Length: 86
Image (cartoon, rainbow, N blue to C red):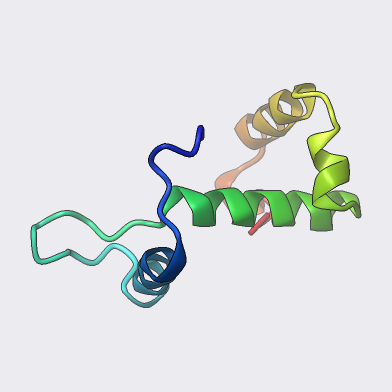
């Protein structure tokens, strides 16, 4: 994400709470309630930090090859066996 489409402040809080309270629900305009990108990013980063026992700054210093390894793992493991990173 480059930051141009990001929401913040009370709008982000409200979007996160809607995603938590009504996952898969429908907005009044007919669109599906989904997790905002900021929440997905936060859950992913914090989940990886838990998994590898590091701080977000340490994770950010890693090469992007770690993402390739995670994708390979995801593809090779049955859905019910995939570790919850968030």
